[in-house]
Length: 284
Ligand code: MBD
Ligand code: FE
Image 1 (cartoon, rainbow, N blue to C red):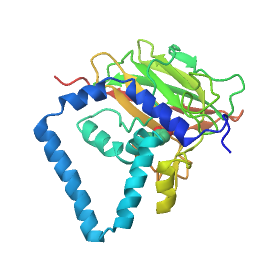
Image 2 (image 1 turned 90 degrees about the vertical axis):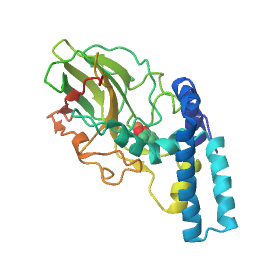
Image 3 (image 1 turned 120 degrees about the horizontal axis):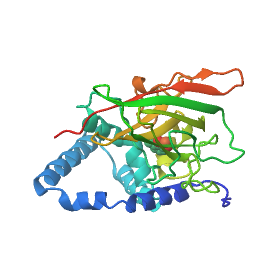
């Protein structure tokens, strides 16, 4: 039985689809795509599908299974989840391969702009009884030439149950989401808790694909960040914890060795970590 307290794929998928629709730029991108480019990319993707069908002699039974599944992905609102888990990593790779600064990785489906401004040395919005190992993260933002940047960090992550506010039920609106603006010397210090590993919803279409293929549904525990500073390219990335069993087989293929934190456990059980960001100037 589904109760209102239980997160469901349809609920988080609907929320992710609704959130995507609030951003106008994807719809502008649809209008802006040149015919020749659309034709070339669509043809190439379709021939890769035809090749797969011929090589594996795909049957009508399988074709109908695919049709039913694709319809269900839309009905569950899981296109953002599907695309960000299985496609975005390649787009991110191509988009950022010219950069010399910090490594980026995928944004995923659960970013929400406009999180509360917290300051440079602050605790992220969380419940009074928020569970999870306390984590204090100190860092500095600089340009590739070493100039300190008074940039801002938008941080969002799952709670100790692997749930994101605004996408899972019964969480305060901005729980574990905050914007931190560095001091003029580029430094910041953020207090939060360690997120739990994240499991793709198992009751929706993406979960059914995972089960049907015998894959696992896990992303390693991660912190999402967007780092911005005037005159610099925005960095979207994620940070991971060294002891997570899924760092080597992230379902979303979004772990890179440069993104592993090195937290130190304190005598009170809390953890501290240092992680800095280096931003590339805007190209012109
Ligand atoms: C997530 O939390 C996430 O970061 C990605 C990329 C996909 C699904 C859930
Ligand atoms: Fe995530």
